[in-house]
Image (cartoon, rainbow, N blue to C red):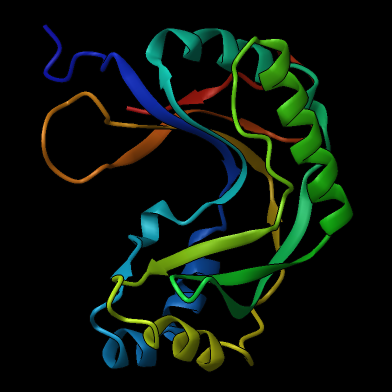
Length: 203
């Protein structure tokens, strides 16, 4: 008997994730902002991802076909060398840190992911990729915290790290009240052919 039955829908996205030491480095740089801007809604560190394709809320039934399709040509693309750098904001509401390194390779990977999603017949809003990692969101009555926090991150330069795994991430939508939580549905090591590195699945 399953304690957590499969929800009828999930919020789904495909992403890369910085390694723990890179996230810890950024979290240390954010300490003044955590203290100085407590009204911001800070993302959990474990939810920090670089989204390549955000599919929105989808029926859970689409996940198996998407998971199988991503395990092929996309997972054979090479690992990337990336870093986290600086800070910025969208519309004074969303705080982010930027992505540096092999941006050309990152755009190629995102294009390949989106092609797979489309080939699976999954509809989504195909926005241009603006590589970033979302950190926090402001309340509607707080127009200053995000721009000030972004300015405080302007000098941040993280160490380079290899982005070696592609992640298919799903939410717990459909499981009742409470905050949305995300977990890996599956992940694949980049730079290997299909069948040579079985997908690692979430709990």
